[in-house]
Image 1 (tube, rainbow, N blue to C red):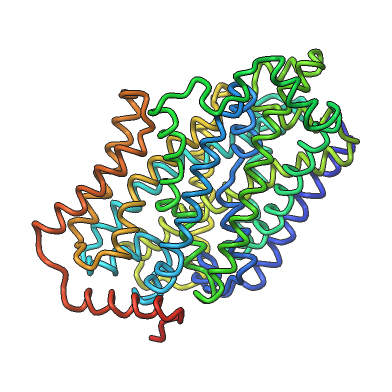
Image 2: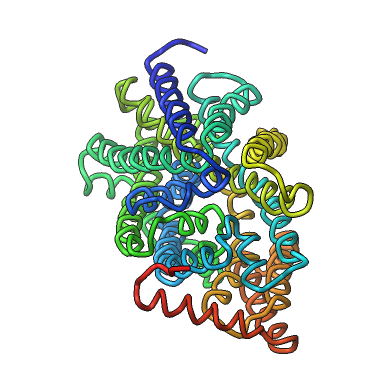
Length: 498
């Protein structure tokens, strides 16, 4: 690996992230701190942490690559994400924050669902944990692939070596600092991602002679690149918009709502997060769109992009910016990868520790033991994800798409209904979770009608929840009373005092 300005910038960035991990270690006193930050995240950290955790490497690689290939029609996905994220903040965030604390201070989603439905046998917890481990391992692999692509193209190293190096830094600061390290680094990473995605398309556009000139050059290549409906059918548009449904079931995002210090900070956090998201998604679409015009004029510079469109942001920064600035902007990809990958590893670790190890194996385990077991689980899940990511032909967006649908359909309907429907029961939750997961796996395998699997998965899961809740044993009076307490607390905009 050559020692150049980009290498120095990358190393400086990685050292900063690890340093934050060590600082977070100082504030990590018990297992609650390690997996949920002691429920003391402020509004700004919550907002940017949700955004950074959401937008993985696909934001700077997968989405620009898709727009580079197909044009502005791929922005239906960005529209769906904005709508889904805003709705998630509005109908889930405050209720989940209050409900998880009321349910015996639940630290994980499986823990919350067990207490929400009085599941003494913890069947819900086990099924929930299994779903998390399956889909998060795939999701984590997408982050590993994105990191490997970055190091591979930047430092001209082989894919396997790049994979291990890209994963190592993230594993290190999650291992050390836990949730606080992940949340604090997310804040830095979110700022870097936004700056990179605002600056890069502006520079590309200026290089091509301004906005009108750039649009004209894209139109000259293929006028249909400007058509929102290019190559799209009703099913295709519905599938892209349906990405927004995934937000309701993403454990690594929902845990941020659980960790806020008060529901009073949620409205401000929501506004901040959505503004950040709009800037980032618009920037990602612009990078792919303007990049198409740039490389049409500079063909020799874009050979690697033609071979793999997901490299469009990386190559643009390399050819348009001073190496020092390019290093900072390209670190934004590493930031996107590390921010999402870190919280995914932590959710898997906390699930294995809280919902398997402490629940079934060592109920009396000490805080120190739980923290160290959690750290070992970070390593274990990382190794499995690296194994999945070993295929150099893996595509970031494809892996993310599958995992996103799996979580959205498995947990989305269950979370929404558990927060809003008093008559929901344990059997309904179990049926919804299993139905959503199985539908996604089967639908993805056969690819019926070209419809994104999250749509049938979400619909069938909702139906299963309603049917099995109505035909089985009714909720206990205690469950109904807690439900009413939570609703009243949220209505008044006050945290629930227990």
